Image (cartoon, rainbow, N blue to C red):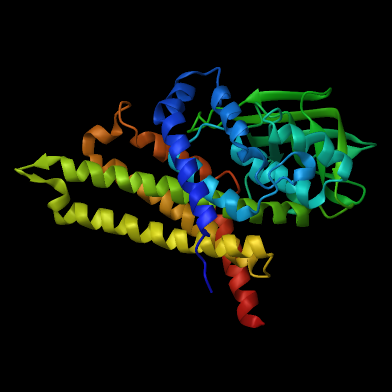
Length: 371
């Protein structure tokens, strides 16, 4: 079985890297980080839309490229490597996936062409309090097509045009589409460790809401969206982890102490070797998840959990050890190390913390072994 990408997909990956190296240096993330009034790079968002990336998995009938999720995986890896300050994940990994899974044709016509053109940003609003995604997590309610309740934190909720919201109605938890520029919606921007990815508290007071999917299947749909997003986020985290390892290696090869490169010292060698091993483990699991996602394999719940857990570990560990390899200078504002540490922490929470995914992984392993 070949888990590698095709030549066309590798070409797409290389072209994405060239584009982002030219158009998205780390100064882009710094500019957003330094400006409290900005939570993403508007110009870069338009350029990414022109590349067609926002419509990668959107069918051609809705003005997308109509490609597969493997193509989206290779783009995700390069976006993670570049620390792109964009609401790409919230829009493409979460909102688009929800619409493709459960949206009516009218709902798809209303939002997918706008997303593909870069004219609409989406977000996924499920959490109301700490803890795993369960039926009791959703206390927001929809009565008569009107949504009331609060969701926080919502990644990119401060800039999104619409949200896919988990809420209860007479049939139980469901997913609902809400226009965030419509009536009954208020937003409060939240402070996070990585301000280059915005977050908000969304409050709804009689906001018009349209159901996604069938009544009562909200939790199952939300879980399916999270599984898809977990695989795609894993590729972002792998890209970020690889770049952090490269930074650490380059610094260690060129930083001299006592007349020799610090890369020649055993302690630094061990750091770099451990980073490499974790990155390769994460990559292997991400590839497994990509195969399961693209083929619709029954192993997807297991593969997504494994990809999520190992990618969270690799991204955090590489960011941490990159800081340590740089020594005292690595903790300064002028170095880019903290940008990778911030993003590792942010991505480690955006689809649920690693602890919750470890519990999912154990559950899936137990089910497989019992079968």
